[in-house]
Length: 229
Image (cartoon, rainbow, N blue to C red; front, side, top):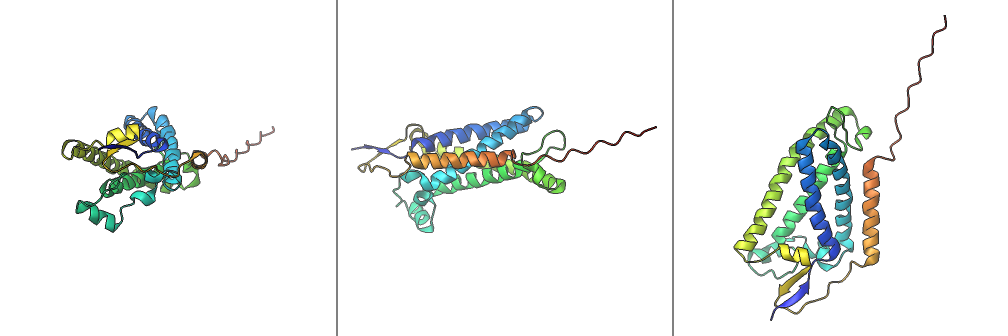
């Protein structure tokens, strides 16, 4: 008998689809350039808050959202490769993909905040570093996007593989929060209102920090004295 088992809590699902939407928007706006680069910066700032929220939720969220439940230890990887893994959340290989995506997106955000386009736009925190370093990080930011696109393609290919070869729908549980299992369901623990509030406050603090609003503006040069004749 199949049981309807709760797997992904609502904050995790909102994070997942928000991340997919914003990353797509960041890639498209970055490729378009021009006036769209302003939106590229805004989307990047929203992604800063989103990623920090997920990092906090990885410790404060419900059972399957926590890093402790899916970080791919050697024993979990061996069990999965032997066909003995029976978890409900991310499988060990999927967990590697999730962690790699978070790490690469984090690197993109860090370099983007300090980058510049040598025309009319600079990252929100670019005033904190020398122009030479900002130029280097700008080049790295443009280079890393290729790796991110490749990793996203691999992630989508894995979803298709599971759907068509293993006959396992990975998308539906991320939409509904439920998964059909043979074992009796266990109620996830954690991830209550207080945990959500803390994660949201950390996300807001990260957005504020990344916005550079706290950076003092450069001093205004004094006007040259008017010569008297």
